[in-house]
Image (cartoon, rainbow, N blue to C red; front, side, top):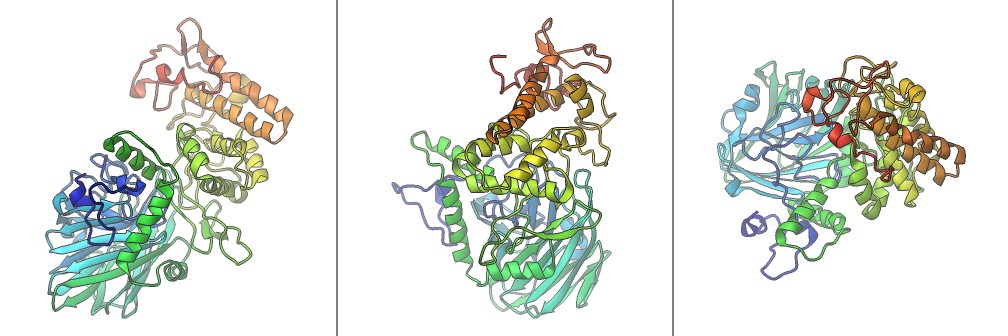
Length: 574
């Protein structure tokens, strides 16, 4: 990134002069690696783990290949949620004809990277079609927009509440005018393959100027009304500018209720100082990033380091409100729950959505335990809440619901790492109970690759306990139901259970799971020299090629024998 363009900002971040010491946040390069991105990957105007993940969307369909893609020349909207299996509340400032019913393709605008600035917590783009400069920042639960319009009688802000976006359809939506400067509404997000239940996101939008006209569209037809309702509906706020000038808009979110969104707004962003909010966001990012300080290396290496660390502090999103309220979607009906409060009635922690902690024992478990122990504890309590509410510690929750992403019990390496490093201010007793349940038939290991049924068997835990390995073909057809990979994952996770048990002084369980952690040897084929899948009748799988690719790799999850043979981090001598 060219520093003279990226760091000389009009929003109050200041200028890094030649020779001046750079702060960790100054090295973050948000646009890096956005040429081929994923919906949850990019979130520029966001706080660490923010509920609001505000940024421009250049592509709006799918999961992979949606969100901000550097090579796409159009901005289709600015949406507020870029989360694991969640998306929503897309907005777009336009000038001229109110073309909201035409959808993303109707109101998209070209933009240029030459006039674009993206920093941690801030994004600026010029919408060439409309002559509008859009600037974005946020608090944890409130998106903050500054749109500079040309002189016009026809300035609009579209809020496309009913439009599908990314991996999510919209079952229902509503937007209404509350007052001269406030709109509110909701989007009911349809289930996905991974998130099997709907979830509602509520919003409250406030402007710093009176709305001169409010209306919207239903099923592609424009209408003026005080409230617009329906799955293909959206709304608009119209403004008039006698001369070019800015419009400020705040959009607060909640998954609990509209009133909770309003409370989040009042609690986090009562004022209208956009530049101060940008500075506060930049400073907060610097505080988090500054926990890990590096010396030496090249400018490029430091940029890579802090950009990667920025991503490590971005990918799990806050799901609870400022007062600790959140939606539990594990039962037959959604329930409002709340995290514990302190003596002054304040939430003691947040609860989070998260993609799978697949592979986090190599990365996040190390970084978080060293530099962010409170965050690690909160993440564990969030996963353990699912045991308390739904009967199993989660491994990749979204919208208050299990997603059963990937395989195994990826929470236990996180829990064991925390406990054995002295991070113990989560609910240790519930964590142990849930860990033990997940390590037997009927726990989360039995739910393999988005297997949502109550009698899930794709994880093969009965066979694992009885035979010491999971045969190929257990549980029938389905994603990630691959016995050799499951056996290797379970063996490592059993070792993690043993370490947790040992730390708790539970010697019998520690010995039991230490023995189970040797189960990987059941799939060691000494003749070929590789970990090799076994069939239901106990025979080696044939044909077998250790370097197979893709769908030809029976028994392995997104990998092959040449890789999984070395996945025995708990028994390197073995």
